[in-house]
Image (cartoon, rainbow, N blue to C red; front, side, top):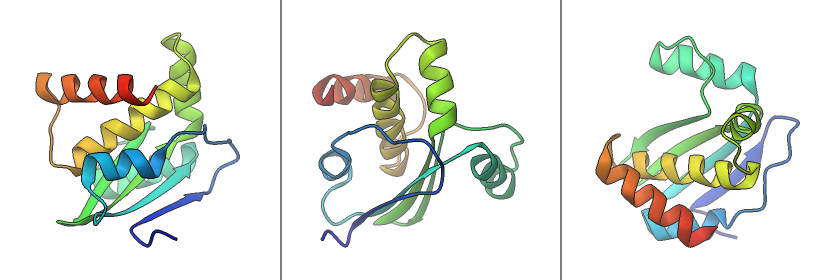
Length: 126
């Protein structure tokens, strides 16, 4: 068992089959300690309000804990809604959200550099 990576599910939806551990290691390294939790609308909205002061339902939230650890919450219901809205597969969209969150944990901010790296990784793992 990899003690540097854990996945939990607190919502009803079924997470798509994605190489989460391999992608996490590719982006953040094997020593980065990541907790990935699949959540629904209520918990993701509550976390967004409590931790970020934002009142909307997010698709992915990331919180660095230390330089080498962090947590990520992916809202499966929101991912499904957005995938349909953007006419993209649920699996591909969830993959993109996961990679997006990893890049934030790596320290990247929104912008062209992050977007290019995100698209390169999505292509690699699709």
